[in-house]
Image 1 (tube, helix red, strand yellow):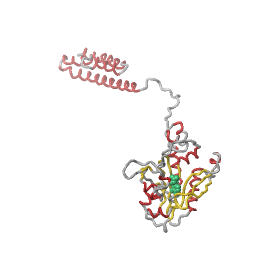
Image 2 (cartoon, helix red, strand yellow):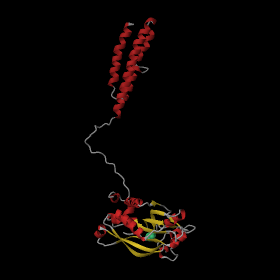
Image 3 (cartoon, helix red, strand yellow):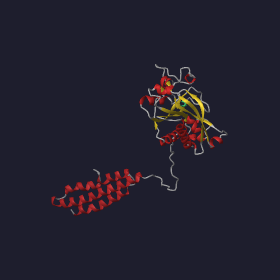
Image 4 (cartoon, helix red, strand yellow):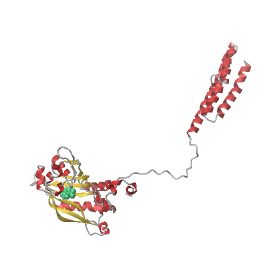
Length: 335
Ligand code: DAH
């Protein structure tokens, strides 16, 4: 009995030292096998308990179990330490290295300009409206009082779809004026940013698809003065406080009278010009009100439309419209 008890302590010490010396998890598993695995030396000592006289076994069992608990705790602690060590990076960390820069995306310049336009009109109580890009002749032309022989309906300008009913890709956002007036009752105060399509060859100032903003204001007693004041407010917001505008008589089938809007600003002068033509507008033609079933004796209104690319080109000094569609990050990251 005495010799059995005497063996426990040195065996335990050897086992503890061995576990502690394991350099990695694989070595630790091997050390565990050498001592407390089925063939382990410590396990072997436990098996000898059976040879002790019956009265000695309780004391021997107590001593050897205490040692085993200690060994298992040491094993778990060593395993824990080795696992934590394995999770650490192999190379030391250099905290003086510069940080990693994550490239930040940003909004496309056309989106930024569109949002600026929408923000200005919102201040005046306008809301954004939307309509389909695949339109029909009625909404794009007929209802806007554009007769069938009008040059804007020439197939040179319009993409028609090879489908029943002769659908087309809208050539302007003016079609949405009709869609909105069909759906709701006056008064109306909307702006419509959106994509339009024309059969143009791409060059520095043309692209078969581009963007417009349409505006429509209908109420009782609306005047050209309201139109001019609104346009002036918005262009000053977009192009700076030194911006001035002028109206020139023009023709659009859906407005009467109709105007072209020119604007001038330090930016325009820098381009070597006095005035730049920027938008079309006018008082809603009575026939257009008739077409949507509104009484032109009661309701008056104005409408305008302009190209978003053109505004963006002037604002940022961009000389080729195609840059907007190429998605070259060297261009995009400048905005
Ligand atoms: N639809 C015209 C175009 O695409 C722009 C325009 C002019 C819109 C006069 C209007 C307007 O609403 O009243 O060039």
